[in-house]
Length: 89
Image (tube, rainbow, N blue to C red; front, top):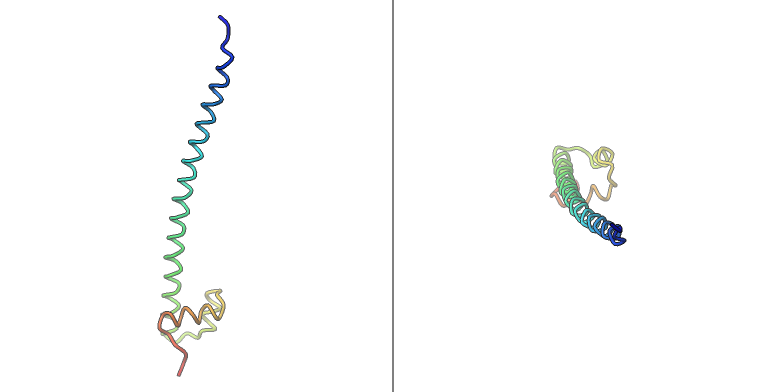
């Protein structure tokens, strides 16, 4: 019986379809991982800000918060102001 010359093309087309479907699944999984990481970052940032404000309210100097957090002085100042900690009177 002669071999059908279209069989390799059909198999290759099926392989391509499977690869495209696999790529779509991988992209959706990656999106879910990114969303979870973004949420974890948001929570960690909020917790850092909360702890910085609490430390400032307890009398920790802004320069010490800058050193401990690794943030710039201006970033720390903005975070503390947003948290209700103003400049010393």
